[in-house]
Image (tube, rainbow, N blue to C red; front, side, top):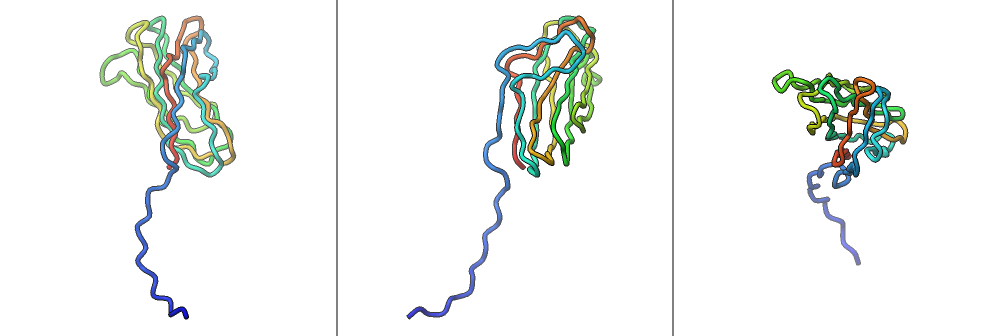
Length: 165
């Protein structure tokens, strides 16, 4: 015969949410642009699931062929419940005013850096924030030259890091 069931024990604390390690994608070869129209940074994209909130971080290595041309950094996505990403792009001055900051809050949005301090020198632009797609969609990083007919290069080793939060 089975006896009476005892009282339920204490429940442990809930662990952190998420699904493990972040997804990291790396640009395998340099890409160049000599136009002001955004082009995909091939390979720096992530397929998001509707309703899931992601922390999006990107480190975009770039260089310019002339000091007067900066990086245009943008992205495209599908429909979003939330898209709030801070973009920081190095610009001409190497001082407290050496970084241009802007917000990426909609598909097709972008931030434009105004020149660089030295030609053919690697600089690192950054993106950081939260994204919640309202439908399954792709987040695709994009770039362009600030001024037409000059070369901006997205460098191999640039990374997109996406984590479920």
